[in-house]
Image (cartoon, rainbow, N blue to C red; front, side):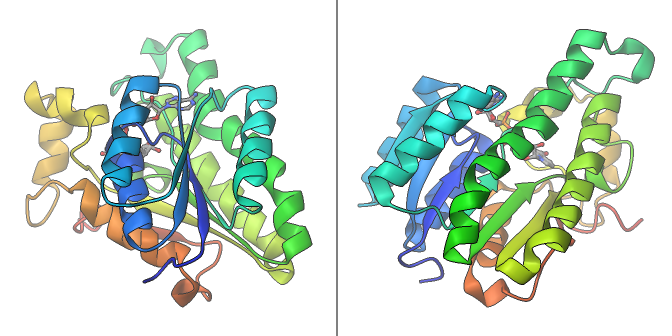
Length: 251
Ligand SMILES: NC(=O)c1ccc[n+]([C@@H]2O[C@H](COP(=O)([O-])OP(=O)(O)OC[C@H]3O[C@@H](n4cnc5c(N)ncnc54)[C@H](O)[C@@H]3O)[C@@H](O)[C@H]2O)c1
């Protein structure tokens, strides 16, 4: 198994890609710490993993709050003694709004959850990982971290920032055993975008048309790739953005 004996902390695990990655990591042998603000969804993910004999610790916490993040890391270390992998997955989107349509509050919230929270959790875990001489961050960005047109103005900005943050993280700490990779999905069928697919939102119709196969990504597509990137098999992949988008960003 790819992740045997590893301990992985996954944010945004109540839904979509966070849930799929949590299930896949557990199948590949990892003990998983699940985080989300959505307690009900988190309990469902926990059940799905436990039904499959996985080892789980669920922690309801808002990752944009520094104190909550530190408590979560303390609990995780108390329970499992280590965290080998951190999947910074939780994020929010404000539809497909252009700059003039985004309020200052929306802008601040998106930048806080999608970027600052990643910095908070990374810094809470790094001292432990540096002491061990090993640690892996899978930062779930988006092809919207490399191109425009696949989200709102704040979301696209936040994902470009996350791709940059991930590069700098690898640049600074690779020699100390730290890996950080930006995982960049294209349009994937999760609750974040399902409403827009159902409404045939023009931004989504255009995105689907730009995928050469015209097939929307599935959560499992991303989860399989994520588990590989988190594993020691990917130990020479560091700092870069890895796309999984069915070719959406090539045309
Ligand atoms: N679905 C897509 O098409 C797509 C494409 C590219 C990238 N992504 C990225 O994949 C990741 C997962 O997205 P998804 O599609 O599964 O979305 P989703 O909305 O289904 O799941 C996101 C989860 O994050 C949680 N969350 C939000 N704010 C939080 C906070 N402050 N603290 C803790 N948890 C919080 C939500 O409760 C939710 O369960 C995101 O980073 C998203 O940007 C998604």
